[in-house]
Image (tube, rainbow, N blue to C red; front, side, top):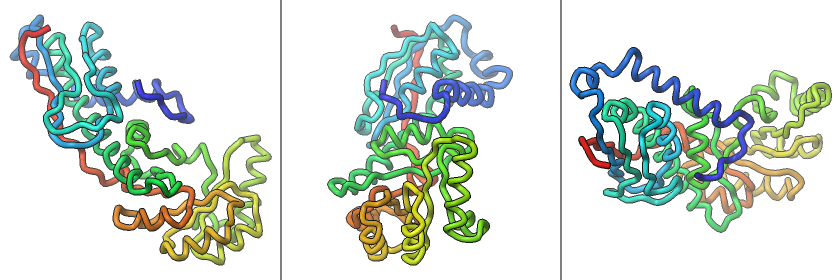
Length: 293
Protein backbone atom coordinates (compact mmCIF):
# COMPACT_ATOMS: atom_id res chain seq x y z
CA UNK A 1 0.00 0.00 0.00
CA UNK A 2 1.28 3.45 -0.94
CA UNK A 3 1.94 5.72 2.02
CA UNK A 4 -1.02 8.07 2.19
CA UNK A 5 -0.31 11.78 2.48
CA UNK A 6 -1.67 13.61 5.50
CA UNK A 7 -5.22 14.84 4.96
CA UNK A 8 -7.32 16.91 7.40
CA UNK A 9 -10.12 14.34 7.27
CA UNK A 10 -10.71 10.72 8.28
CA UNK A 11 -9.17 9.20 5.14
CA UNK A 12 -10.73 5.73 5.11
CA UNK A 13 -14.11 6.95 6.37
CA UNK A 14 -14.24 9.36 3.42
CA UNK A 15 -13.00 6.69 1.00
CA UNK A 16 -15.70 4.25 2.13
CA UNK A 17 -18.31 6.99 1.79
CA UNK A 18 -17.26 7.63 -1.82
CA UNK A 19 -17.39 3.91 -2.61
CA UNK A 20 -20.78 3.47 -0.92
CA UNK A 21 -22.27 6.37 -2.86
CA UNK A 22 -20.78 5.08 -6.10
CA UNK A 23 -22.23 1.61 -5.58
CA UNK A 24 -25.64 2.97 -4.60
CA UNK A 25 -25.68 5.18 -7.68
CA UNK A 26 -24.76 2.29 -10.00
CA UNK A 27 -26.55 -0.69 -8.46
CA UNK A 28 -29.70 0.89 -7.09
CA UNK A 29 -32.06 -2.01 -6.28
CA UNK A 30 -29.75 -4.54 -7.96
CA UNK A 31 -27.90 -5.53 -11.15
CA UNK A 32 -30.91 -6.70 -13.12
CA UNK A 33 -28.90 -7.90 -16.12
CA UNK A 34 -26.57 -10.14 -14.11
CA UNK A 35 -29.40 -11.46 -11.95
CA UNK A 36 -31.40 -12.27 -15.08
CA UNK A 37 -28.61 -13.98 -17.04
CA UNK A 38 -26.06 -15.46 -14.62
CA UNK A 39 -26.53 -18.34 -12.18
CA UNK A 40 -26.27 -17.26 -8.52
CA UNK A 41 -23.27 -19.48 -7.75
CA UNK A 42 -21.34 -19.00 -10.99
CA UNK A 43 -17.64 -18.33 -10.29
CA UNK A 44 -15.54 -16.21 -12.60
CA UNK A 45 -12.12 -14.58 -13.03
CA UNK A 46 -11.35 -11.04 -14.11
CA UNK A 47 -8.24 -9.31 -15.43
CA UNK A 48 -7.65 -5.56 -15.37
CA UNK A 49 -6.09 -4.82 -18.77
CA UNK A 50 -4.17 -1.57 -19.23
CA UNK A 51 -4.76 -0.16 -22.74
CA UNK A 52 -2.46 2.89 -22.74
CA UNK A 53 0.86 3.96 -21.22
CA UNK A 54 1.04 5.97 -18.01
CA UNK A 55 1.08 5.83 -14.22
CA UNK A 56 -1.34 3.40 -12.60
CA UNK A 57 -3.42 4.59 -9.64
CA UNK A 58 -6.43 3.36 -7.71
CA UNK A 59 -5.46 -0.26 -7.08
CA UNK A 60 -6.18 0.03 -3.37
CA UNK A 61 -9.54 1.57 -4.21
CA UNK A 62 -10.32 -1.33 -6.55
CA UNK A 63 -9.49 -3.88 -3.89
CA UNK A 64 -11.73 -2.09 -1.41
CA UNK A 65 -14.64 -2.00 -3.89
CA UNK A 66 -14.47 -5.74 -4.64
CA UNK A 67 -14.20 -6.65 -0.95
CA UNK A 68 -17.08 -4.35 0.02
CA UNK A 69 -19.39 -6.11 -2.42
CA UNK A 70 -18.22 -9.61 -1.56
CA UNK A 71 -15.71 -10.40 1.20
CA UNK A 72 -15.00 -13.78 -0.41
CA UNK A 73 -13.59 -12.19 -3.56
CA UNK A 74 -9.87 -12.86 -4.03
CA UNK A 75 -7.78 -10.18 -5.73
CA UNK A 76 -4.12 -10.47 -6.74
CA UNK A 77 -2.44 -7.11 -7.23
CA UNK A 78 0.26 -7.34 -9.91
CA UNK A 79 1.22 -3.69 -10.35
CA UNK A 80 1.44 -1.07 -7.60
CA UNK A 81 0.04 2.41 -7.32
CA UNK A 82 2.48 4.93 -8.80
CA UNK A 83 4.16 2.40 -11.10
CA UNK A 84 4.68 3.04 -14.80
CA UNK A 85 2.54 0.74 -16.94
CA UNK A 86 2.34 0.06 -20.65
CA UNK A 87 -0.41 -0.95 -23.02
CA UNK A 88 -1.06 -4.67 -22.59
CA UNK A 89 -0.05 -4.88 -18.91
CA UNK A 90 -2.29 -6.69 -16.42
CA UNK A 91 -2.69 -4.60 -13.25
CA UNK A 92 -4.53 -7.21 -11.19
CA UNK A 93 -6.58 -10.39 -11.40
CA UNK A 94 -9.68 -11.10 -9.38
CA UNK A 95 -11.63 -14.29 -8.69
CA UNK A 96 -15.05 -14.71 -7.12
CA UNK A 97 -18.77 -14.86 -7.67
CA UNK A 98 -19.53 -13.73 -11.22
CA UNK A 99 -22.40 -11.47 -10.18
CA UNK A 100 -20.20 -9.82 -7.55
CA UNK A 101 -17.40 -9.17 -10.04
CA UNK A 102 -19.79 -7.60 -12.52
CA UNK A 103 -21.34 -5.43 -9.81
CA UNK A 104 -17.89 -4.01 -9.01
CA UNK A 105 -16.71 -3.64 -12.60
CA UNK A 106 -17.92 -0.15 -13.57
CA UNK A 107 -17.14 1.66 -10.33
CA UNK A 108 -13.69 0.09 -10.29
CA UNK A 109 -12.97 1.19 -13.86
CA UNK A 110 -14.39 4.69 -13.35
CA UNK A 111 -12.19 5.26 -10.30
CA UNK A 112 -9.02 3.72 -11.71
CA UNK A 113 -9.29 5.35 -15.14
CA UNK A 114 -9.78 8.80 -13.59
CA UNK A 115 -7.11 8.36 -10.91
CA UNK A 116 -4.57 6.93 -13.37
CA UNK A 117 -5.13 9.82 -15.79
CA UNK A 118 -4.48 12.31 -12.98
CA UNK A 119 -1.44 10.41 -11.70
CA UNK A 120 -0.01 10.33 -15.22
CA UNK A 121 -0.50 14.09 -15.63
CA UNK A 122 1.02 14.79 -12.19
CA UNK A 123 4.05 12.64 -13.01
CA UNK A 124 4.53 14.43 -16.34
CA UNK A 125 4.36 17.94 -14.87
CA UNK A 126 6.67 16.97 -12.00
CA UNK A 127 9.21 15.57 -14.45
CA UNK A 128 9.21 18.88 -16.33
CA UNK A 129 10.35 20.61 -13.13
CA UNK A 130 13.14 18.16 -12.30
CA UNK A 131 16.27 19.75 -10.80
CA UNK A 132 14.60 23.15 -10.28
CA UNK A 133 13.54 22.74 -6.64
CA UNK A 134 9.94 23.76 -7.44
CA UNK A 135 7.15 21.49 -6.21
CA UNK A 136 4.03 21.02 -8.32
CA UNK A 137 0.74 21.45 -6.43
CA UNK A 138 -2.87 20.65 -7.22
CA UNK A 139 -5.83 22.98 -6.50
CA UNK A 140 -9.47 22.70 -5.41
CA UNK A 141 -10.54 22.37 -9.06
CA UNK A 142 -11.70 18.81 -8.49
CA UNK A 143 -14.80 16.79 -9.32
CA UNK A 144 -17.43 17.36 -6.59
CA UNK A 145 -17.76 14.36 -4.30
CA UNK A 146 -14.48 12.63 -5.19
CA UNK A 147 -11.86 15.19 -4.19
CA UNK A 148 -10.15 12.59 -2.00
CA UNK A 149 -9.58 10.25 -4.95
CA UNK A 150 -8.27 13.02 -7.18
CA UNK A 151 -5.89 14.54 -4.64
CA UNK A 152 -4.71 11.03 -3.73
CA UNK A 153 -4.00 10.40 -7.42
CA UNK A 154 -1.95 13.61 -7.60
CA UNK A 155 0.19 12.35 -4.72
CA UNK A 156 0.52 8.91 -6.32
CA UNK A 157 1.80 10.62 -9.48
CA UNK A 158 4.55 12.38 -7.52
CA UNK A 159 3.12 15.91 -7.22
CA UNK A 160 1.88 17.53 -4.00
CA UNK A 161 -1.44 18.51 -2.49
CA UNK A 162 -2.36 22.10 -1.75
CA UNK A 163 -5.02 22.74 0.90
CA UNK A 164 -7.75 20.11 0.98
CA UNK A 165 -10.61 22.59 1.32
CA UNK A 166 -11.57 25.97 2.68
CA UNK A 167 -11.09 24.83 6.26
CA UNK A 168 -7.43 23.81 6.55
CA UNK A 169 -5.59 26.96 5.38
CA UNK A 170 -6.23 30.67 5.15
CA UNK A 171 -5.73 31.66 1.52
CA UNK A 172 -6.44 35.36 1.03
CA UNK A 173 -7.23 35.90 -2.65
CA UNK A 174 -8.09 38.99 -4.68
CA UNK A 175 -11.77 38.99 -3.71
CA UNK A 176 -10.90 38.75 -0.01
CA UNK A 177 -8.40 41.59 -0.33
CA UNK A 178 -10.87 43.84 -2.17
CA UNK A 179 -13.79 43.06 0.17
CA UNK A 180 -11.75 43.59 3.33
CA UNK A 181 -10.35 46.94 2.27
CA UNK A 182 -6.84 46.04 1.22
CA UNK A 183 -3.86 43.83 1.94
CA UNK A 184 -3.05 45.13 5.41
CA UNK A 185 -6.66 44.85 6.60
CA UNK A 186 -6.97 41.33 5.20
CA UNK A 187 -3.80 40.08 6.90
CA UNK A 188 -4.60 41.77 10.22
CA UNK A 189 -8.12 40.30 10.21
CA UNK A 190 -6.78 36.84 9.43
CA UNK A 191 -4.30 37.03 12.29
CA UNK A 192 -7.03 38.20 14.67
CA UNK A 193 -9.26 35.32 13.59
CA UNK A 194 -6.55 32.75 14.28
CA UNK A 195 -5.80 34.25 17.68
CA UNK A 196 -9.49 34.39 18.59
CA UNK A 197 -10.29 30.84 17.47
CA UNK A 198 -6.92 29.34 18.48
CA UNK A 199 -6.71 27.66 15.09
CA UNK A 200 -3.24 26.77 13.87
CA UNK A 201 -3.44 27.46 10.16
CA UNK A 202 -0.93 28.86 7.70
CA UNK A 203 -1.73 32.15 6.00
CA UNK A 204 -1.15 32.55 2.28
CA UNK A 205 -1.98 35.70 0.35
CA UNK A 206 -2.28 36.44 -3.34
CA UNK A 207 -0.35 39.19 -5.12
CA UNK A 208 -1.49 40.44 -8.52
CA UNK A 209 1.50 42.65 -9.24
CA UNK A 210 4.90 43.65 -7.84
CA UNK A 211 3.41 46.56 -5.89
CA UNK A 212 1.22 44.12 -3.97
CA UNK A 213 4.25 41.91 -3.35
CA UNK A 214 5.97 44.95 -1.84
CA UNK A 215 2.92 45.72 0.32
CA UNK A 216 2.74 42.13 1.60
CA UNK A 217 6.43 42.08 2.47
CA UNK A 218 6.05 45.36 4.35
CA UNK A 219 3.01 44.10 6.27
CA UNK A 220 4.39 40.61 7.02
CA UNK A 221 2.49 38.07 9.09
CA UNK A 222 1.99 35.48 6.36
CA UNK A 223 3.63 32.17 5.49
CA UNK A 224 3.44 32.25 1.70
CA UNK A 225 2.93 34.70 -1.14
CA UNK A 226 0.95 33.52 -4.15
CA UNK A 227 2.01 35.22 -7.38
CA UNK A 228 -1.10 35.11 -9.53
CA UNK A 229 -1.08 35.34 -13.32
CA UNK A 230 2.32 36.99 -13.56
CA UNK A 231 4.68 36.20 -16.47
CA UNK A 232 7.93 34.36 -15.61
CA UNK A 233 9.98 37.57 -15.86
CA UNK A 234 7.81 39.28 -13.24
CA UNK A 235 7.85 36.17 -11.05
CA UNK A 236 11.65 36.21 -11.11
CA UNK A 237 11.62 39.83 -9.94
CA UNK A 238 9.15 38.98 -7.17
CA UNK A 239 11.32 36.09 -5.97
CA UNK A 240 14.26 38.48 -5.61
CA UNK A 241 12.07 40.89 -3.64
CA UNK A 242 10.83 38.12 -1.33
CA UNK A 243 14.42 36.97 -0.82
CA UNK A 244 13.50 33.83 1.10
CA UNK A 245 11.55 35.65 3.82
CA UNK A 246 8.32 33.90 2.81
CA UNK A 247 7.47 30.82 0.81
CA UNK A 248 6.55 31.61 -2.78
CA UNK A 249 3.96 30.10 -5.09
CA UNK A 250 2.92 30.85 -8.66
CA UNK A 251 -0.44 30.07 -10.23
CA UNK A 252 -2.58 31.02 -13.21
CA UNK A 253 -2.14 29.95 -16.82
CA UNK A 254 0.34 27.19 -16.00
CA UNK A 255 0.67 24.57 -18.72
CA UNK A 256 3.17 22.06 -20.09
CA UNK A 257 4.71 24.68 -22.38
CA UNK A 258 5.57 27.24 -19.71
CA UNK A 259 5.84 25.33 -16.43
CA UNK A 260 9.60 24.82 -16.80
CA UNK A 261 10.16 28.56 -17.27
CA UNK A 262 8.24 29.25 -14.08
CA UNK A 263 10.12 26.52 -12.21
CA UNK A 264 13.45 28.08 -13.16
CA UNK A 265 12.54 31.42 -11.52
CA UNK A 266 13.34 29.97 -8.09
CA UNK A 267 9.71 29.81 -6.94
CA UNK A 268 8.99 27.20 -4.25
CA UNK A 269 5.61 25.97 -5.50
CA UNK A 270 3.68 25.88 -8.77
CA UNK A 271 -0.05 25.21 -8.49
CA UNK A 272 -2.19 24.24 -11.46
CA UNK A 273 -5.77 23.08 -11.80
CA UNK A 274 -4.86 21.18 -14.96
CA UNK A 275 -3.71 18.26 -12.81
CA UNK A 276 -7.34 17.45 -12.06
CA UNK A 277 -9.87 19.45 -14.06
CA UNK A 278 -9.03 18.49 -17.64
CA UNK A 279 -7.03 15.27 -17.71
CA UNK A 280 -7.62 12.38 -20.08
CA UNK A 281 -8.59 9.16 -18.33
CA UNK A 282 -6.32 6.17 -18.84
CA UNK A 283 -7.89 3.53 -21.08
CA UNK A 284 -8.36 0.16 -19.38
CA UNK A 285 -10.88 -2.68 -19.27
CA UNK A 286 -11.91 -5.52 -16.98
CA UNK A 287 -12.43 -8.77 -18.85
CA UNK A 288 -14.45 -11.34 -16.88
CA UNK A 289 -14.64 -15.00 -17.89
CA UNK A 290 -16.32 -17.99 -16.19
CA UNK A 291 -14.30 -20.35 -14.02
CA UNK A 292 -10.65 -19.97 -13.03
CA UNK A 293 -9.10 -19.91 -9.58
